[in-house]
Length: 494
Ligand SMILES: *Cc1c(COP(=O)(O)O)cnc(C)c1O
Image (tube, rainbow, N blue to C red; front, side, top):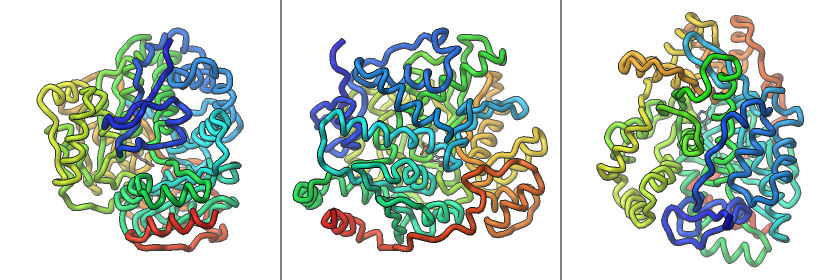
């Protein structure tokens, strides 16, 4: 087989191998990297009885050079098999007539751990394979959960340092506390006056800044990304689609080969896109149901084919989904049309006017695979309450959006396909809203953890225990306009 290469959605980047793709993070023409090869169809029967590490090895090595499969197994073992996750890694629970795949059992209690526990190992492995002597500076923009998961993944990893930018008023108090109390010699956490989109676009600009490129050269540094613009974030996320499906086969909830739906609480669209990859690799999926909050740009896209970013940005009770620029949609559009000139035109239109609309053919494929809906904040709280009262299962606000949107879809469509909802966070990551949903009571987030535990007896994840009392180590806050300059200064210090 010829070498597996990754190319840019916008067509103007020399194709890169796996290691180069991981280290570079984003294409140098501003596009995103996608596989330049047909992904293998996986044999579901062969995967059926594998544990998470072995299944991850099979799926992930689809994207890596053929001769490193056993190395990949070692990396997966370090990420998922070393006690940071429970034995099953992704438990699948039943709540009424839906299944909940718990992606939040890792070190930071949110689904970002699924990929960010592995990405640092991909990076160090790639550095070694490339004989790279430069230091990597990881830049991450976060709406709250990526930041902490990336920090946990990269802290004290040799050859790397990490800078996390978060909207100072746009993350929950628990998310903020998790980040600003982060330990590690190579970590930096910076609040910005601005929202997630501002942070993400500044980071994208940084990658393409000539000034920073020059500084990097002088100081023997290169920049990479821990956001889901890095293909190394996406690949590990394909695994749990197979794993949760096969868990249902093993427990006789579905028959092998039976199609299921997945419902995905979405923001930057990385999670859902990984599911589409799983489908391309042979997983029987009928519909992906894309769930959003009041920042419902994805709902409108899937319902009309038009992506229109000219709209107000709302801060909601599901802050990890408060996003108007869903980067990974660019990858989906590319994969569906396989035409980088067209993608580039769309993205230029998006930059210039804030809008693009895909053509009829492309939109028809989109409609065949994806459904979408959104919930108001009141409905989010109602979904938490209804699910808890009707099934006894406690959802966080993001997953509740998946639940509520799915219930509306089920009513409208009469689709009886079994459905897996991906749970993206522990309810204790957003306890204030969850408690309010159940009792109408509003407490500060830290007290809400205790109150919620008292009321529901659901176990508080270890990473969130005692979080209130940790020492604050990071207090820096800068203006969004100063991010590039800040990064420049940091490079000079290396
Ligand atoms: C990041 C995040 C999402 C959105 O996931 P995307 O891959 O960006 O679509 C949803 N819920 C939670 C809790 C998250 O942290």
